Length: 124
Image (cartoon, rainbow, N blue to C red; front, side):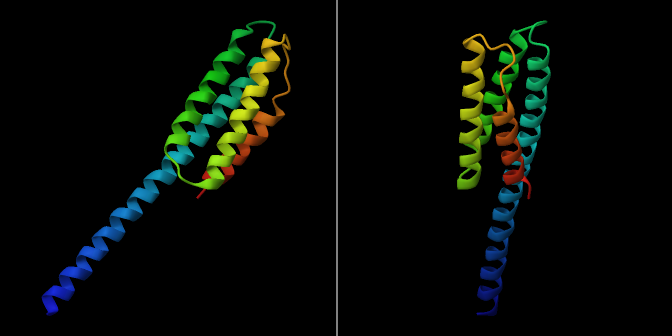
């Protein structure tokens, strides 16, 4: 009987530790991706500031943000993070539309705000 209880407790502990590691890995992925998004948003700000020199830089920065958002969205089941990612996707879409409509210095404040929210949600 004692061996059975000990074996069950050991198995339960192993499951808890394994699940905990998965949660930690997920949180670390979120933090890394949020950091990459922050870098891409910084690049977007620089690209918009120098739009007359190279208008394609803004598109590349937006593509980078899209790539990171896709990665992050596929790794989470968290409702707050999903909303933050959706808000950032919408803000990126607004900037893309502005650029396509000829705005060489679009307002990226929505992207910046939404990226900060992703960072907040991802911070453990």
